[in-house]
Length: 334
Image (cartoon, rainbow, N blue to C red; front, side, top):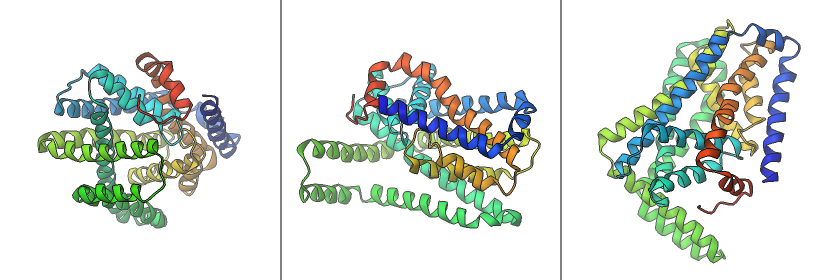
């Protein structure tokens, strides 16, 4: 518990330090003239994005015969987002998601399969978005100085999608290979059971996806698309609110790269890595004071707001026991 709080505090201090150091003395002036209406618009976009996520959760739950009301699904989404934001590399998201869906009546395997399905659809949406963004940036040659960033991100995401697709198409071979690999290693019985559960969850995810109708899958895809378009448009709205002009496609790419880099810091919310990547990518188009203000407002809406709004929902629906489990770094299923 103490370790988790310490990591969170370190991440918070590190992230805010980068903002204030980079923004300099002009940061507070830029914040003073920032329109409150723009901040409210950005927060509303985040909230509507959560509702899209609640919608796709409801579609999946009804697909496995466990329908859920919208308010409860929205609370589940907010609690899960809080757990993702408050734990290193978002490690608490899966545990919270499975815990809440089990309380609703879904099996732990089905809940984990739904989480895996969410990730697969997210990857698909990001690949489509990356293709559209790349084409849009090529239309505007002024932004081609970021070509290497596009190539790096495209390789990373496309590689993940390719691996997922191959695994889905040949999942029986994958399961057999994993089984042989486990037997050839000196792995304890407890760890073997954990690995076996992971393999079974993947297999369940495959069957879950193949079992949904095309119409249901399309609805889930649209909800996922709506969520990410709203969330990744927040930065563009904030920059426009600062009376600056940047292509929407460029802001989309900046966020994809920043969040990807943040995963490598192993701090809650990707603190440090997100801020440094963000400033490096936007420094060519924004002055220091404006960039610091944009970064602070962006992190407020896409990270700190997740913590502030999600914390009471998390502790109301999940409780202190699971938070202590997350803080202790345990991975066993509740």
